[in-house]
Length: 104
Figure (cartoon, rainbow, N blue to C red):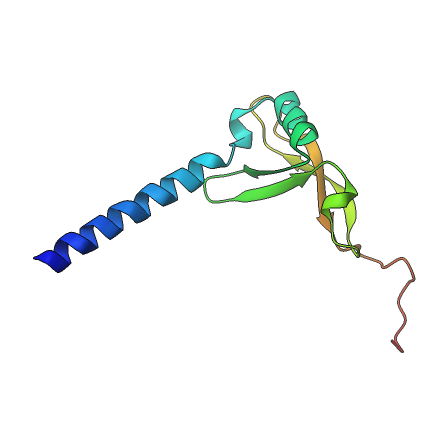
């Protein structure tokens, strides 16, 4: 009986933590395009919920990227636009700056 209570308490604490973690991430779909852009501008980098089971990080400048990454405009679904240019995302460039060198 004691083990059962302990397991129940552990499950309850786990579900509380999961709910808190999900609530901490702002939902891009519930914001206007301008609100989302301002939030990224204000905080520098924001992880938004973008769908029922998806999320993405939006950044304001290259300082949030790795040295080999570049900025690309990142669009997201907001309350007033299906494809709002919220901010940027850090990605590896399709073609590296030095070009391809097959001997490296």
